[in-house]
Structures are given as C-alpha cells and as structure tokens.
Length: 106
Picture (cartoon, rainbow, N blue to C red):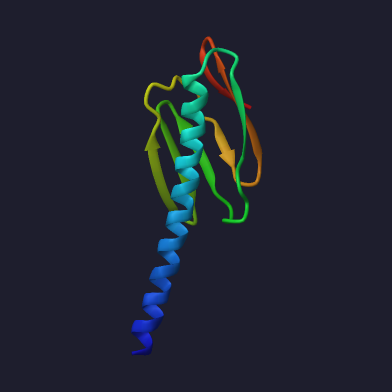
C-alpha cells in the first residue's frame, strides 16, 4: 500500500511539472504568434519565469522546443519566419520584434 501511495504522489508531481512547462511553452508560442500577426515594427517583451527550475526554449524555424530535466516538448509556430536557432533561458527577459525579414528575438 505504501509503494502505491508513493508511486501515485510521484506521478502527480511529474504531471504537475509537465503541465507547468507545457503552459510556459504555449504562452511563449502565443506571444511570438501575436507579434508575428501584427505589423512590421511591433514588439513585445516577455519574461520567462524562473520558479519552475532551469529550462531552455529553442526556436528552430517553425518549432518552439522546451528542454528541462532531461525532458523535451515542442509546439509548432505556423506562419512564423525565424531563420535562426535562438535559445531562451529561464529567468531572463526577451524582446520579440517583427521586422520586414521576420521575427527577431533579442
């Protein structure tokens, strides 16, 4: 019985961790899509939370990938023109800008 309870609690913590990182991934993708859908020169500042531990977001053409604790998740960024492999790191702030050449993250 103790093993089952311990296993259930561990599983619950893993699900909570995965959901919180998935929400970060989806929120950043949403912010990038919002900037992309507005006109040239539009920009938006994002702050990546650090209370979920260390994670990295990688932008690879039309995909946004999150990596944390040996886990990985991804989402598509349809119609976004990002021609670099930018890495976004937890706890930092970034400016997303729409230019005539696509999206720039600095």
